[in-house]
Length: 342
Ligand code: UD1
Image 1 (cartoon, rainbow, N blue to C red):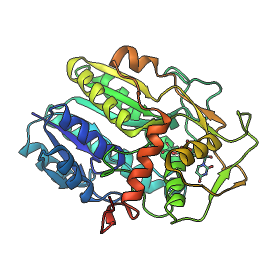
Image 2: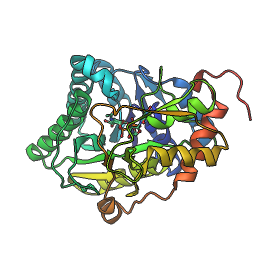
Image 3: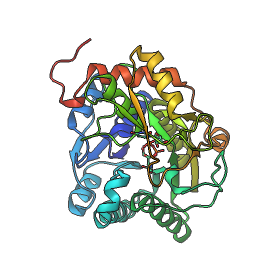
Image 4: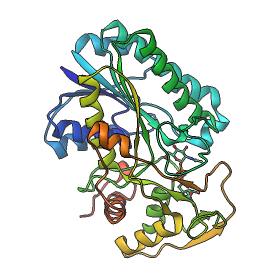
């Protein structure tokens, strides 16, 4: 029996594949490669010295999806496939709703058809909207401020309805905080297309000389130094959280949400300082206006995941910065990099 990983070639997906293989699971990967490259999966194979099948399949293509379920005995699905750019979702809402929501509906339908009812879903802290307090626990009110966030929230609701209708489903909703870092080998990491919209890939691209300076969005928030505070989590810790959630869905029934964060917040200026120290590179930056839609402070209460999944993040900010830098330095053009410097 194997674990199907949708979106397995992406940033979180590729790291999750490594951890699944290391834990002894057989995996099958699906990806439409719209925002990822097959090279990431070749590197997962190289790192783990394990082989697995992967298919270029879009979840909207029901027939190809059914073929995969017909050809492989699948025990559970880790569902990470989805579009995730906030700005793009605002200009292309229908594309986002169709891709993320219809894709998930088709996936659930096919899973049901083949009697596969265990799922780990890649959600996001974005489902807390503009939280009124921190730390954020799973029982906080949910809302969304953009189409991307609404797709995550709607999918959570759809999966809850699925369980209400059929209690033989077992589903974990993993609410990620801010994943950064990379595998310590520097062979896999985040490879955003175009100019990064998230903080860490922007910083590493400034560090490697691809971008001139970082724009810090606001220094007038009610935070330690005025810049926005987030709960940055090492992507390998996040990936290990998926393995723990998988163990849970395969051994119990129900639908449950878990925050995957560290419980500690760092400001943008603290992140710049931590990165400069870890990489020994200066990051030129300029303070500009707040980015619309940003919250001042967002960090997790991760105690539920600790208690119920026996998982907690163990990698600190130095490791996160070091590994983000190592990946960027060795792969200045991401997976398109031709010659890898050691
Ligand atoms: C963003 C999304 C969130 C999504 C997550 C996925 C927004 C408003 N939120 O979270 O919905 O789930 O990415 O990874 O886009 N910053 C700068 N300069 C930059 C980039 C960011 O100062 O060039 C600041 C931001 O203002 C924020 C912090 O860095 O305070 C982190 O930003 P980012 O990495 O984009 O993550 P989020 O906004 O938390």
